[in-house]
Image 1: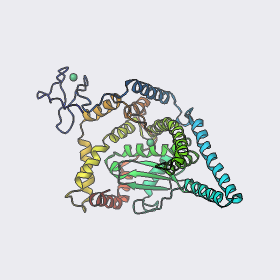
Image 2: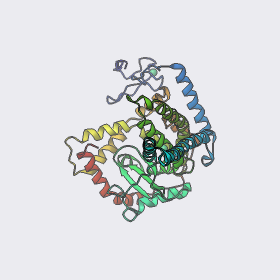
Image 3: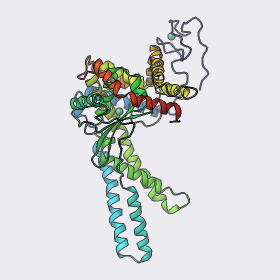
Image 4: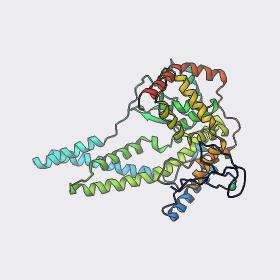
Length: 403
Ligand SMILES: [Zn+2]
Ligand SMILES: [Zn+2]
């Protein structure tokens, strides 16, 4: 990390003399010339590969921007990913048949090999996750207005209504399909929900339910079960000192890489698509403001951490109020700086998300002034009342348990 440059006392940029905002809580920088925009920047390790990655990111963005029908967008790598997943499924099928055959015909030592093979197959099989309703997932009867909002958005996007809405203490929202019936579970970050304006909440639901639209690779059972099986093989075959496992381990690593590469690009496209659907239901302004708030995740987490010491756990409302005030107090210049940093920094590692500045740009480019789903004041109040208990319980949990 480079040392923090001296803060100019006169509120003027040392590089271009423009007047710059000074807030002691945040990095002092110049929005005019980008002086000190990213004091923690590390020089790119491999500038050429960084340029290539950046060009690929820009290309993907341009494609997303030009695709005006988000439902029709499907990545060229999709069939490749599905075919590689098919190879993994075929390997599993071959292992099952082969092991069964060894077990049936071989002498005892061969039978043992067959048995080991079958056990390996068993542990590689996909395990459909179950989510049981619990105290974090209000039922439809308990929260009719909350489900009503999700249902209106789902209908607008042409996807099935969600099965369960579940609140989580971390700062991520997600959509999953669980169980044999592939029921939709909408996981909503309660801290995030608390700091969002009503239309940003519509944007949040719109984005997550946007992942329920067909063609999202991370929700494809065919793909995900193959990925998980290969991931487990990779784990089992970790050679340690059993040299015999080196080759299966290398093969599993190769297969994993073959699955991972297309997944990265196809996932990034799915994120752009979910953003597009979020814009459609909520508006450009709400969607891009939601994406902007997601860059404040670390600050919100830090505040929740700090609050766990010496805070009255019975006063849940105060915790959420403080979080809201904290987010509202982040100056515009700091929000802008984070977007600039996203544009300047090298994408450090493979990611399933496009860079945040491109997501914001896409939402803005769509220019949707009014989304197709409203969340009027009386509905907001009704949902608030429905969630009173879960909000208090969550505040108590955040303040008393190390989540
Ligand atoms: Zn300047
Ligand atoms: Zn997403």
